[in-house]
Image (tube, rainbow, N blue to C red; front, side, top):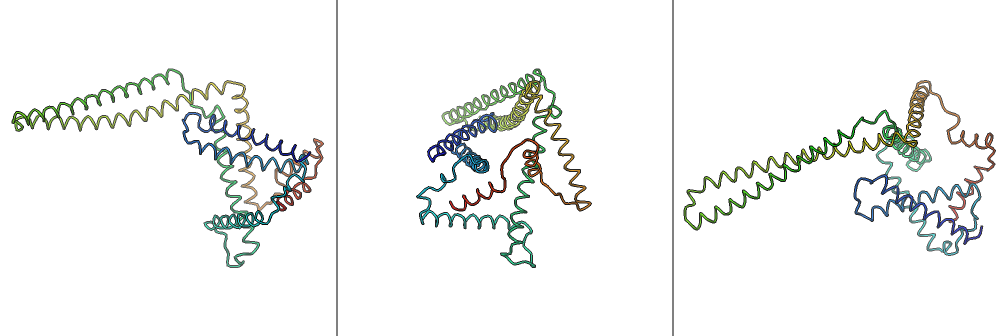
Length: 319
């Protein structure tokens, strides 16, 4: 493909990635909330778009979809761009080194810049981040997709909670009106007593009004806290009702089935990891390598993974 064709492919794919990231942010992450900060949406969409583009470039390089000469743009080879890239790279290394300081990596047996220290930082930080992400996904996916974790809620339960919320809001409104009326009466009594010169006679009545206002404020504060709890309960009940309705669709049945499969897989991984730790076993092949072997030997795909990855690294280094 020519440079123009490669540019069109990358540009169109980035547009699709950006639209998909925007829809995912609005429809999935914050579907029940009004996000008014457009800059947050833009940063999320741009970050996800660039991440997908990098993954797309690696896949395209392995499959030899794009032309390798398209990466060699003339102005990229200028000295200023190279110096700027070098400075950014040094800054990234400094930040990466500082991130590894909380981890127990440094050892007195090896030097500060030894290969053991560098590989340990990459391994420990990478494994920690991947463990956090995979652990969250392993727990969150069955909880959000399986019917077993959905609390049984009926439409009458939702209506009862919403009715209680409406009653609480009505009581808050009534008591706030009483507070406003009491304040107005207190102000009128004070003004009238000044004009008539009988402040001593009405001081006791005014103090009782102030006491009633403070008591009403306490009651309003309690009702507002109750209304917040009822709102959260109503929101959760609505979500559960939507999940129940979704679980009855074909999509819900499919994800429920996948949830059981991945739950069994997670239990198997926990068991086999425990066995490997106890008996000091070391795995020979990772799942990615095993999947590529199946794709090549059993499904007939023909591509040189080592050559493609090496070529990608050389192109990124040349840029």
